[in-house]
Picture 1 (tube, helix red, strand yellow):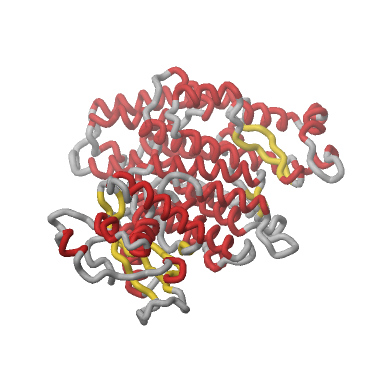
Picture 2: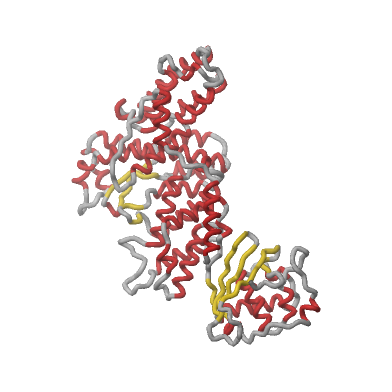
Length: 569
């Protein structure tokens, strides 16, 4: 790639990023709301671990605000201008009284359902936010925000505050009792559900950590054993059983990490949940639910699940991200993006315990199989875009080395994913892949020639690659079939035209053998309907032409790629 092409790609990438809004700084929003609205700040617990608590916590906070305080606060701030200076309306007073009556009753129902003390219950993150929202509306103070508002939104404030108390299991119950969701509704539900679910999972795993000392006697050979723990649950503190039963009620199950080096609660698609999700949610949900079941995917920088299983989940996540994306605000897939980028990297670059290369310095078969599966995905996505050149590079070296693999970074994956979501990746697909002019390539070109030369039916070449069209062009010259060469040119008023008789009677190029003339071809697509095939000539070719490399222009037509007259640059 020359400097000009690199600059074009960087400019396109920059313009694509510019179309998205800036990322939200949740800490800044929290602080702003607390400062301006006098809301008591929510205490944040930070515990370092291999489970990337901070990332999950931050993403969960951002998601919960969609259904809680943040949305309501923005509405209130806008509506201060409507009735500024006016006193609280009768409708507002009625709203406050109703909220004061209903909220404590509903909150107590949730606490009793989970059989938790008030102290334990109030530590669940989404309950903390719901309590803050309740306080936001009902606290008696002179500068109450409800002094200045539009009464038409009181019902929304009420519903948002009360829904903040919903447990994940109750969200699934409501889902089951409702109508089938379309794609947009499914995306919205998954965002809200996963936010609540992750809060409860974080809370439950924090409690599990406090029981690790009591679980030590029930390890087997120094590893956690779930069967052993459950067999002896009666000897554990009462809180452990309550914690486990609550976890299972909310869709969590105990799972072993690394055959027992650790134990955690993780998302479980148990039969009742999976049947509801499969019936009510749009099929797009598959990738999201698979992500929830396998997150956080890694532990101590090693993949938690078999590579093939992880790769299948990655591709399902890819389908969700590309299908669900409308804009960054509605998409809400930050946590999925983070998982996708890191898992993709591990699947391609390997891990310490499972490196890419075997003892002979060759790529292991399991990596080859996964890479080929990913690159053969028939879609405009990061998998084929990034894996195709890597696999081609390795194949040329007998699976021993690849500069494309050496150069791959997290940033490359992030950029490819971003371009795929915004629809710009197609402009870069199938670029930079060198095609060798060998016997196999000549055989493909010969087959195209046989299907096209007799009838010159343009539809016969509709599926041909840009490299094959250029190969056919020069193969026709090799056979001295200049009429077939002529029929490859674009024939419409937008392009330069040369009469057929004049062209056939003119001086023609002579090529004895395209394999002896050209070494390789590489297609560079500069726009959706325009590209250039770079032909590298053989160093010992018979032609006297001094140019080692030539550029051959192609234009996308309804019947595939075709050259204009005078295609050589």
